[in-house]
Image 1 (cartoon, rainbow, N blue to C red):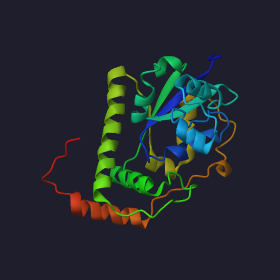
Image 2: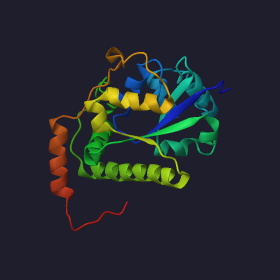
Image 3: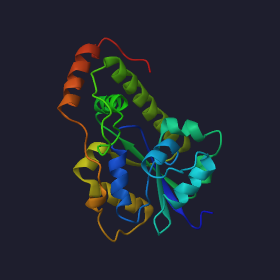
Length: 232
């Protein structure tokens, strides 16, 4: 079934800028079409109303829908999404010649605020309409901050335990220079790009605004006691 296919997994966490990276990679036409293929509800909403719910069917989609004509496929996965599939497949065995990218965001509080806002508004991409207005909620931000720390820790544990040395990319640097990130992925996959990313196929825009910065300041005032070392 692999037919000489080889690919990569973008290992990351919510609100890391992964959609922006994925669209840039996909737009080259040579580096797969990375999406959350193990998130069948999301795929049904955004791409295919008949996207399979079963994991075996999702793997088939990764190797077909997720691949470019040069048989390179891509996917992205959050650490908690692994739990959705782990009882049904051994994902590294199911996906041939799998390489790894670790995508992180330097501004962890900003990432948590972005996730909290998305949960409130239902707007996970800039191209989606907001269902309602977000309101500052320190408890919600704290929960998403805790969740992000766990997501990061799980990936770091995975890399340490397996000896996997992933290509490490950072959201803030990708925003500054998306072409550099694309070139790094191309080099990892041994692909000589025939063209640069097609900006007309990159619809995602940065969602952080002045409200996000105000919330960060307010959160630190309310929850920034330096005499506390958090347990997560």
